[in-house]
Image (cartoon, rainbow, N blue to C red; front, side, top):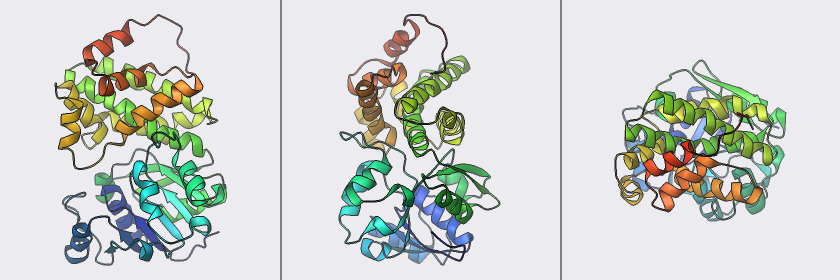
Length: 337
């Protein structure tokens, strides 16, 4: 178990979220080393105290040190994992270290394609990271706002509740409030599947539809997230919290959401391939759409919104046709799950 003294923390991933949390941790009094895949990003952080590629107009603490040497970063016992889900195995496999004895705090949101594994499962199966040492920290938290110290709340979940409480203490401050939970499955699935619903929200915006449509999408999208989560062993209440409803609201409505942006551009008439080729940062919801669709099929869970987003992205179905299919489905009682 970690103590309450100043921590030596490694942040793996110098995108917007990893950089914002590195900044926060230094402001909380901890020593932080930040790993970047891109040497130019690391050089800019060290020389100019900024990360203009991923976190514009933010001055970073002079104490923040960035490196491209992954083995150097993995020396610390507390690791914050902030790299896209689909690159976790490839990235960590390049290092010569044993993660079994380290505390891993994951802030990525996604489901691995093909294997359909949540991130806790990826880490356990590939790097022997045990549930007691793993924490998922998730919720409605855009990096741009956290970096500007705008009040934000998230949840940290671990099967070892004491570990979740410890992470809660390390990260919490006057503008970043962390709640604790022991529902890892629910928090991981909520953070992942909401990105699929956010793509649908963007399509609604791109088509110029109204508030009625967006409200219906968020409500029924939450029902789908809950159904899938419960089928996989999550606590139903988790989806009414920060990792479910909270994250869903912010991602479906914010100008910062890359997933909502993808949908908006498709709704305005661009092809999926055009939108993705123009983006520098990855929209996790694109991969999660396929994974969530496959999980629903595997477990026999009805996910009509996910299915229609899948058709739009991968089967060239027109957004207007997908919406018509959703609206003309067989009528039924409203069940939450």
